[in-house]
Image (cartoon, rainbow, N blue to C red):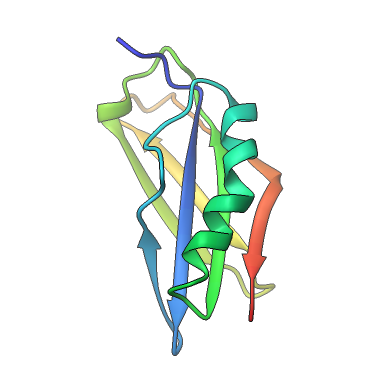
Length: 105
């Protein structure tokens, strides 16, 4: 079984309506792998959306990817905020704010 250490979340917005965008890879074995692919993924998604946000989140590789749910929102200061929840109540994801990206035309 693959050990997952990071996930990427992309959100695209058009006319004030935002939706989560399919990422090029479901999960990454390292946060660095995710960070390396974030900018190209945000750039590619921006072809279809007027505003595109992206962020990598580190997760405990010992936890099951299938038991994970992702919630996101755009904050009042125009940042992508993501929350990752697992079936186990003690599991917490670490959000890497350095890898945030927003692309506007």
